[in-house]
Amino acid sequence: MRLEEVELVHVRLPLVRPFVTARGTTTHKDCVLVHVRTAGGSAGWGECVAEAAPTYAPEFVGGAWLVLRDHLVPRLLAGAPLSEVRGHHMAKAAIETALLDAELTTKGTSLATHLGATRDRVPAGVVVELGEDPAATAASALARAAEGYRRIKVKIAPGRDREHLAAVRAEIGRTVPLWADANGSYTLDDVEHLAALDVDLLEQPLRAGDLLDHARLTARLDVVVCLDESIDSVDSARLALHLRAADALCVKPGRLGGLRAAVAVHDACVEANVPVWCGGMLETGIGRAANLALAALDGFTLPADLSASRRYFAQDLTESFELDAAGCIAVPAAPGLGVAVDERLVRAFAVRTERLTGR
Ligand code: MG
Image (cartoon, rainbow, N blue to C red; front, side, top):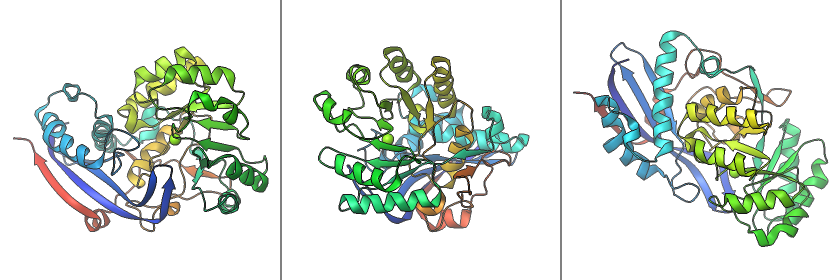
């Protein structure tokens, strides 16, 4: 597949409501899109999940833009290996997805089929922002459960946890699993406090790099401990499994360096008999389509962080994804990513655009 042009588009989409976590409040979705065009006339899209600020992961939109424009895309166009550039998994993943989209569209194969998916719908989980008080958090959790989501997740932080979770549990009962995502905000000293939280899964309790203390914590807690931020490469996943640093893992293809790496972590988890699920990064329809294809692999036994498009965007860049009556979202079945990207909307939301061509 000979590339003719790679276009980078930085888009900024308004969110339907501010997204609040322990790290702050987000009102817009900023990301870099990679659009490849081949000499044979096929095209593909990829979404870089790096966020506007480097507060969740080291990569961020401004840095991703530079590394794509100055280092990765020039190598891609020259046929040089992207592995010459260290790190920058999210930027590399966006290129991998765009190339796969172009290649599979030409072949007439869906991404889900290419990855080895076994399902045509995946159970959807949802993240509930912390409200002003526990009653407000519980009210939004109840509304999401009523919509049919198969798992509720609440973002917690020290001082904003037990009361909110108890209020949510009182509203939704035990019919819907309740998860808590700490985004690394506790320490091993909090073990007794964490043990007392009434949740079905505790996500990333300790800081990202600390697999050793996660192994100690997991050994001491009855609740299912899951790692998210810690799993930033195939190597860190293998080490986490070896150390028994968690009872479950969250796979985010962007953070791992792409879909191929994500499938490798999925396979390692299946072999280790560790449940795994597909995480989300507030993706537009482009990234969401890729995540749905991945989440349809049969080792993803826990509900994904893949909500209906309208939860985030009034206007998405592709056709919107809807929750069905069973709380699932359909996996795109058409060739490539299987969604039609609305280029008019991409242009409308574009903050900056750059075209790079091979010579
Ligand atoms: Mg998380």
